Length: 109
Image 1: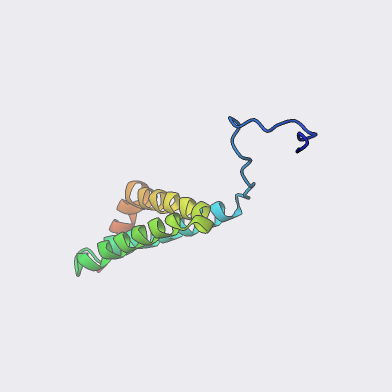
Image 2: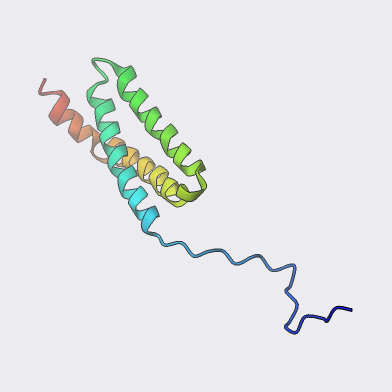
């Protein structure tokens, strides 16, 4: 005959404790994504007159690679930061200072 457990029984309705993850990977991914987004959007703007496929193809490739990183379980937090950083980099360049860069860089050609 077996003995009952000595401690309290675990509640089956409580979720398992999640391992704590530091925000370092997310911040690193965010910073890298912001820089990549900014550079890729700038490249897309400056190359739009010559070969628009290469600029926007690079932007799409960057988004696809960040989604792939997001799908890898061990790099998921870095992928989330990377994807958010790319989005904010695109928005920052296109919405805030893309016109200024366009006037300064593209008009001087």
